Image 1 (cartoon, helix red, strand yellow):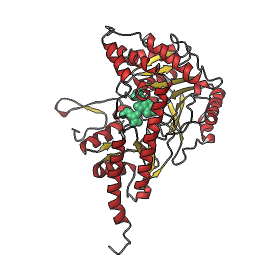
Image 2 (cartoon, rainbow, N blue to C red):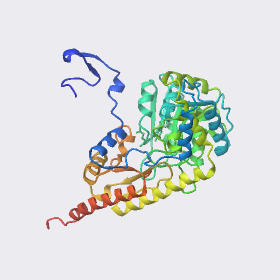
Image 3 (cartoon, protein in one colour):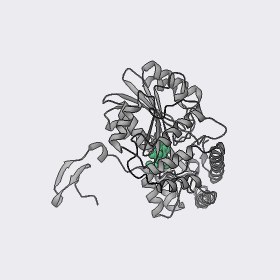
Image 4 (cartoon, helix red, strand yellow):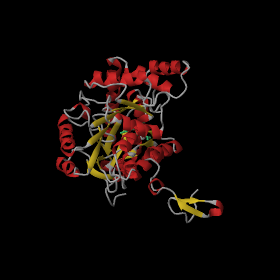
Length: 416
Ligand code: PMP
Ligand code: GLN
């Protein structure tokens, strides 16, 4: 319960005495929108198309590998940078999917999810005062972590509906103090997959400004319409400058497992490993060995993952379009962004997402949550990584809800 008169960040002590304030940045950081909206969805019995997690299990053989790993007696601290099986599997996956040669002993760091990996990389690369180029819309951990490290964010904004990269503004964001860019492709929530051309521009800027790239590639295997995910690290000159981050949560549909992996040049990996040492030190060894088995799965698994999700994307996109949303193309990830302005709703995206969660019993995420400050306000993000029956029911609920509203909204003024 909030205590009356308690300033943000002030700790409440005995008898309500106000104590010294806590860390200002954390005290002023809200609870993540994904948790907030999931709680609202639960409270109202809504279908949760907000937080991005699949509602079916990942591959059974990977679960079996985890069970077997729990029975093999290796329960103590694993090596800090990851069990050898997973480091080798990450190196093999780099070669197999992208032709990147990686030394599993010197260039891989396993973390507790991509979330930790992102923070560890930022910790390893940044000193206070360093500038970091960030692209909006951005994942919710990026900005607070950059700020906690005392680094200076330089924001470059992409906007719906086109999500075009403003090349001049990107170039202008780089300067003599730029240490790094944090690049998310495929991008959440825009579902944009950066093109070879766009990546070449980023690579050119990094080379000219002697800067690094932290590449959040958690959706690397979720790319649709025959497009290809291109790691920035695979571009000429980028091998020592770009670090790439993957997530077993996304690649195997086990978001709760929290196993992430970083591939980084041997000149960077040891310092990144020291950040991991301070954050968590190690990651559960049994899950690491199961993920190693997963990365070794044959091509049909990866093709099946994409094919299945693409069909779900098409199903939800068609349904939302029937309801009357303006549906944007989604080239990768779990998410569709929609314009709800055509539905005539009177309010911003936060109000809209709360409204449909409460009244239509379908939850979505307001896109403004991915922007710092002023943001586009009539877009909502829906996750399609759900059973077909769940997607259909969500569309039916939205349709029923807005059919009623549309009726009243289209009533000519003065005649009702
Ligand atoms: N980056 C992006 C863009 C994401 O959408 C997510 C979603 N969970 C993460 C990082 C974090 O991944 P993990 O669950 O492996 O920590
Ligand atoms: N990445 C997931 C999403 O964008 C959520 C992860 C989280 O809840 N922190 O929906």
